[in-house]
Length: 272
Length: 233
Image 1 (cartoon, chains in turn orange, green):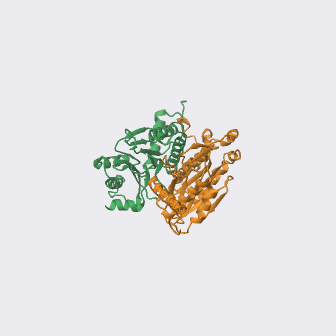
Image 2 (spheres, chains in turn cyan, blue):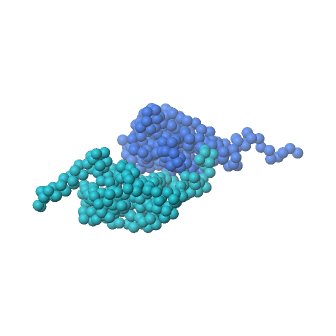
Image 3 (cartoon, chains in turn cyan, yellow):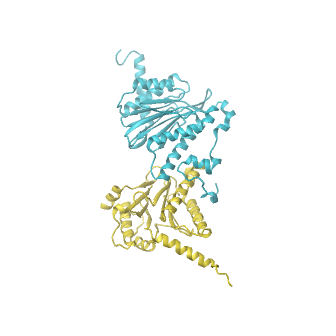
């Protein structure tokens, strides 16, 4: 991309991914070219979830990436801010998934700068659909990416959550969702603890419990690693923007939840 | 018979320059100023939707005067260039200097090759990066209709009344002015430069800031209310 090529763009629209396709094809990587590789154990992200609560949405993910039955990384990031008012959480083949999250955030920022205003939340969710659909050839080769998209709808003034399938199918979830290898357990857990109008602390508690439940049943989901001080990544998105929950808060909450369980098992504590 | 259609290169360039200046002269001016908070960009612009100032990248802003369609196209090219650079390399590799040079090359090429020059002048502003020692300095580049490029310290003006505006700003500009003071200076200077002897009405000001204190994207467009509040103090 030398200087002389700078202003020779043929593409005149407002999509960054389209710009890459038309004017910078060498940067627009085709993951399906990795057909044979997908049979090798590649790093996979495991469990992520999103919960709607009173002020917006909370999105959380564990930090483990596995390749086959080995640990690929213990502190991988699976929850990414897509822009000021939305988050993307990824599960599946880590390479293309992380790249998709990165492209998604550039895409939204690019649109906003070119057009002078941001897309509506639903428009962003739809954009992600298209990106997953473009990944379909790679998905067919085993490089499956299944994200959750969640954000604060500034027009409707509430949190919204979308889940996807590998064909780019987009389904809005009213209250919560989870994806990845431990998602069945996380979803079951959230089903029990979700309550309409939860506050932030309740939502955080529900999310943490769901991740711990998933980690308990699914060996590929990482819980809390006290030895290495690795905690799940939890971000919330409200009218004010995005905020990350600090590790200290997660540490305290984790100890609280574990204590509760220990008390229940020893027959002490509430009710027994 | 001599050659009736011969026009000397000097004459040709002069004609083109005069044409471009005339186009630019019809528009209002813009000032970019280094201030305490970062960089202030202010334009007299009665339209609230057709912006003259825009965000290019994390620390880079664009301002253009002249023909809207032309400078807005340059702004979009800048965004495409910056986002592609940042995607291919890293976000810190996107710099105002490279962008300003690219503008200079592109605008200069149109000036020499095409019949009609671009009737534009642009500013590329970059706020310094406090995270790394030695990268704190701001940059202000100005590219004019023939592709000439200059870098400025303190402040930089473009537009039809740029000379007068320059004089007005220079009189009261101080290094490290806070935003409110700088905005009042810009308001008065833009008004006087356009020959009205009145500060520009707050509603007719387009004001953007590259704010050092913001996390990643330093660019911020001030709302009409924010502008009015700052000016009322």
